[in-house]
Image (cartoon, rainbow, N blue to C red; front, side):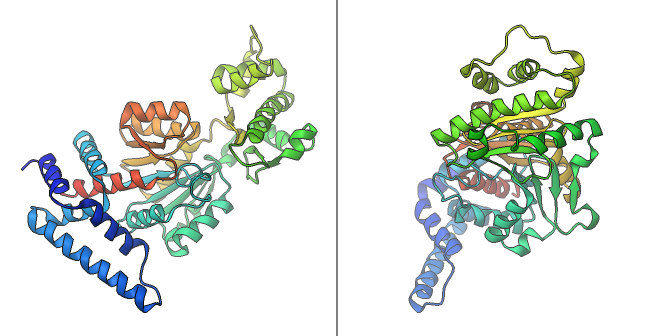
Length: 404
């Protein structure tokens, strides 16, 4: 029987939805100090085992199919089989953005859902390294990872944190390689620009930005975040103003640059920045950026995240560079990664693994347009807001199929 035929039989002949419900209950709600709760959990565990035994008896490679039907929906299982037919290998490392990917402020109270945390634990126990790849500060990421996944897992030596979108890599348990400050390798002239911008960004900001924004506590990047709820109309207007202000400040910190030079350069680089400038009547026309100024700006990235952040970062330090550094420390020398993210910085990693035939990409349905276009054009792994477990289940099923 062909594998597709076996999957059809599996989901046609067995009550997959009930099996998954029992599996989730056993996994996510372990027995507690209550006789009634313990009896309920034990009853569910016994019923799950009995139903899995029925699947095992019905199929060659019964263990694989029993686990598939208990953990993946029909759609997820067939998506996994399609991925295996296309790539002929499983995922051997996870590369995961956090905000609006693993967790979503709108649907999960800004916490990583229990289902997602449990699946990450399952991947870890299967020996799959986890790379958390985020624009957040290291201390923020360490805090919620330890809270959600536990200190032992985070410090297992198989988890790495790429923080501030690639300026540093933290991999506990690896001696002198535990913390890599990638920004220390930048030339002094570029670092001087960042030092100047950081020293002035709040003190010289217009009153509305100074009162409505805060400077994220980064080691290197200069990131203005709204004090208002991310995604709100007030945050959107404030971050638009913050972006325009950062461009003006950058022009003042780069030798021989004018404000029009900087605006023209970044408008050319990013259509979203061009739109923000145009909305304020600030997009310049017919401006030639001098080569010496262009040479500096080509090494400095200005990132706009609508209603979320305006950031100045290094083009030489991005999530791709950070992920490569993490792979080196984790000894992932032949990666086939599942890359999950929602923003332009995540897109760079997705494009890199696609170019290198080194992985697959997934994104939430509210991701930026360019990210969604890439994901649709590759493997169409788009998931609902707050439901990263949907794709993690698909990847888990892919790995089980790849083990056959």
